[in-house]
Image 1 (cartoon, rainbow over the protein chains, first blue to last red):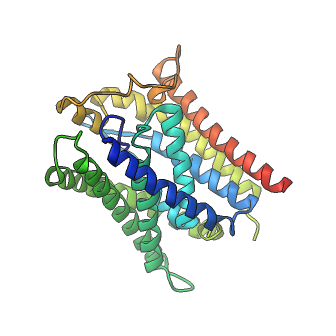
Image 2 (image 1 turned 90 degrees about the vertical axis):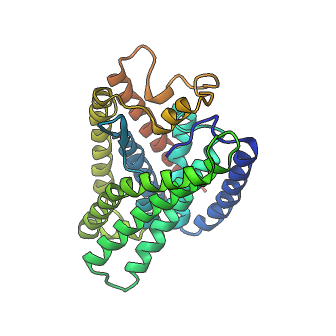
Length: 213
Length: 99
């Protein structure tokens, strides 16, 4: 889902950077209240885990691949604000150190994977686990559906950004269904992995699921 | 409730293990199936300019390391990424403890 350089025109790139800066400013103000050394440790472990998981590219016959994105898991574990900052750190390092995702597309990539994916994952999980003692089936459902929907909507957002950009020769009519369809398939794996991690944490270290929020 | 240090230590060990395993999927099997980034393939088919190498600023482009084989370079790149993240966390914690 990492959009490279050369795909987005200056207007789209500028708009997405503006959204990223405003959201980032707001997120930083919100996390100040919950930031402790322990929460920073949790956030950096999760960021490193997402970074390493994204390197586990599962190649598929036909020359494509799938990998875990992790935005929904970050939202579930850390909430939307700290989850955003955690995912943004991963995207920033991928972009600046490994040129994975373009510098002109950093705003768009952050909107898709650090804002939308995190926020959708968090909200759907909350919807299923709002009771004081949610069942494991509710946790699994909330995590998997949140992760799947997060990836699909993030993919749709990428399709909108590409379709809007005059540099990309196809409009929304092509980019949206392609990105949604592809990510609806990838999202199944994302949902399964997210649910397994959440269930494992709920059994072994339940505080990790609420510590950062 | 405090999160035990051993929990974090275990998590870091698992992360490092993932990095060491990653070339099997990210390099070796990727070569077997002829993997290319889907958006790079789209760019090629649409004759979009590939600016990645033209405006590259890093020696670690696409998780490679100069003078190292792709497999070893992928592991070293993974360790660099994980190390930077751990470093950012450590610096932030240091600031918080001092203030």
